[in-house]
Image (cartoon, rainbow, N blue to C red):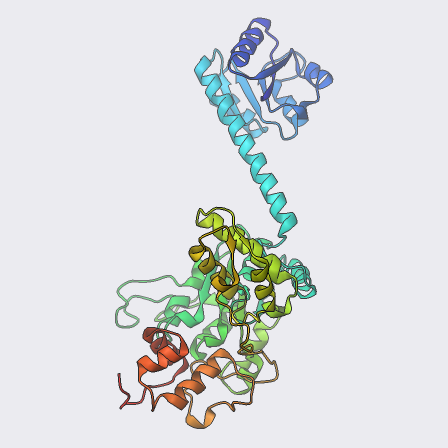
Length: 466
């Protein structure tokens, strides 16, 4: 039951308002002046204070400074705009004119109490999330994740450029969101761009915008994603995929804080913080001339490293249970749990696809499971396979847009990334297999095979069978 304090010097009005509120289920206390209310009660114990504006000794708005976070509804016989504005400026949640309509008073009280309850609920939820998952819901108790959290807290309040490193699927975008949300730009936009998902011919226009007539199909002026991020944060995922021409424009953005649309002769000043991410070794790419060295050093101001899931120890099981709870809630399923055997499988598996693979495995299991306990077979984990790759900072990785020649096929004895393995397998077998057979062996669709060929620059043999 909500507890309401009435501060009104006229006994008739005070009594009538008390009876009205009590008839509608509210607990009511009363006082005749601000001083009486402050001396008689602990104001923080109330859910709402209703006070007259004109009171003996001090105006009703004086109680606002004593009420802390308790909402104050001001009653006034002078229903002028000026008195209402002054009351609101001093912190009143709302005002109501006397003589008031009973229904109007009850509606105002109900609305204010609902808003206050919702605010308390949101604060409690935020506190719980902040306690359990201190950074945007990211879960991690291992040493590497704790170091990451501390570094995010240090760099977020600054405007420094951040480079996030980690294997695919480790959650680099979550890190970018955490940096943004804890920065002074949190109220501004966060624009996320996957550089690998935009065709090379369009990426400059997408990022920097274009003028009408700049190229075929440019029928109108268009603002780019960099301009859209003005006042906020621009997150460029897979920045190693960015063509050299676009890299030059990005370098100018970092140096001059200016952006020039494709086809324009004028530059525009923008205020953008850049967070970039990659799973590639940009330093080696720069040495090989496939990434601008000056841009690399501009990006490499603060480096945040995300550990692969296989190196996070007990985090894997905790993360799996949390992802299971989120998945069942999202799918409106009954609460589920892993069997002991499923937990053992989760802990033993190397998770080459990292958190993304874990999330997909759990979603598949939730969909297929016919009980509340998930067995290991529904996770479809191959516990006998070796991890397909390990990142090695000393081994240069091939450029995704660089055409691979036959003599560039990696030695089978070397540690291979997924893309290196894809290149080697396709080059070694495309003369003996059709596209359908290649796709089946790789466990992907023909469309996916074609897309990866385009992205990695592996042309089909002209005489290849369909």
